Image (cartoon, rainbow, N blue to C red; front, side, top):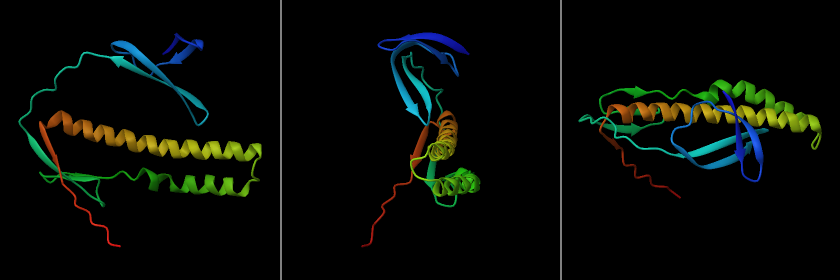
Length: 152
């Protein structure tokens, strides 16, 4: 949905909303990232309590899996970077072969940055969805306390 909005010191701008705003908008942060502008709105919303749950769970963060819960459920790591490695390799190779300072290189760098951004967004989205599932289901969540010692 595209709407018209007014920002102070900028004027009228068209905004493509991916979801309806909730509550009263307090601030708006404009970001420029990889050739695109993003607006991040902070809204004041009435918070509602989560449904009460007596269920408890312990989570062990791992290397081979993203996490293992105390009830034996394994949360697999989706390996977004591994799946995009071939594309990244090709784009990185293209960038390295093009003359520094040229317009073609600038465009190739922008494409490479967009692909890196896509992988980062996939990771953030997956982590948010998995953590949201756990928070919705369990009333108490405990994480393993790691005591890592560096040898040197």
